[in-house]
Amino acid sequence: MKRILMRRLLLSVPLLFVVSVVVFVLQSLIPGDAASQLAGLQATQEDVLRLRRQLDLDEPIWTQYWHWLNGVFHGSLGTSLTNREAVTTALGTRLPVTLSLVLGATVFATVLGVVLGVASSRAGSLAGRLVDLLSVGGLAIPSFWLGLLLISLLSVRLGLLPATGYVKFADSPDGWARSLLLPVSALALGGVTAIAKQTREAMLDVLRRPYIDNLRANGVPERRVVFKHALRGAAIPICTMSSILLVGALGGSVVIEQVFGLPGLGGLAVSATGSKDIPVIQGVAVYFTLLVVAANFLTDIAYALIDPRVRAS
Image 1 (cartoon, rainbow, N blue to C red):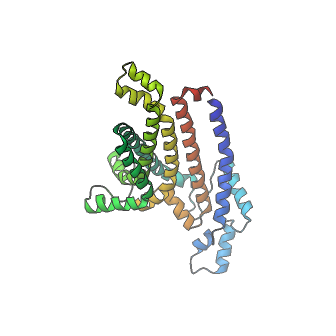
Image 2: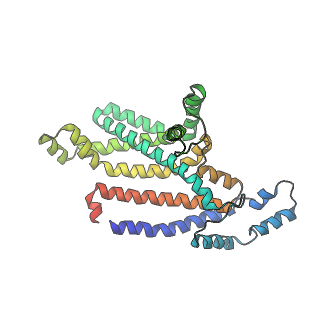
Image 3: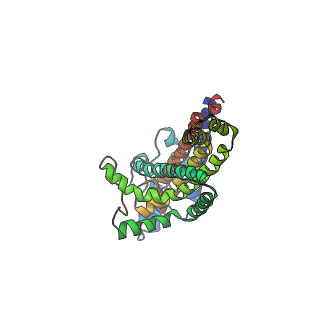
């Protein structure tokens, strides 16, 4: 198990490098640059060129990338070109918002999906077809459309929950939960149905195995058979689906944060792309990659806790 975790950590280094190179090259292909944005519509060509030299945007792309990478080696992700704020500071204030949204959606989808999946695996073929139908519907409905629907119903019409904004947990735990309930629900819907279907299929497979029949023959209560033995046997594919859901939620958070006005990394990435703010774009890409690496790392640990064979490898 230690070898697997070490291999994961070692592979994350070239992964971060490749992602940073790809993002840097792709953003350089976008027409315009930060100098044109900052100079304004009334600026002359000389003004733009002078500002471009001040920001070192007149250098070749690989030189610019080396300067950024050299800063990373010294513990800095650079400075925003638009407001001269340190990138790590800008990302640090927004990271808790994105983490709250993504982790909340993952936990919500996993818990509710497992409950529905276990229930449908015990309820017969009709419940199975219903889960299949909901899975297709949940994956087909865009999260941003669902978010707008929830805002219209629960915020505008009923006034039960705030439509936009974010409250820090330290300021008000209740306000924090209320500000996240709608965006988490919108982001988690597709994941709930996917987890439910995966749980149902895994549970049906485990419940057909001989050791389950032996447990029942020895008089083990059905509740214990299902929730202790069968569910543990089905936990590996459920953990895999939850990990995939978490990574997908990172991408979905970009849109959801825009819909609900949340000051997270996704909203920062959108604004930085619009202003061609290269250091901020790079910083968001690095943070998102680190979150994906952390998700895979935690999944490997979960595998080891569930299956002793993984710990022995």
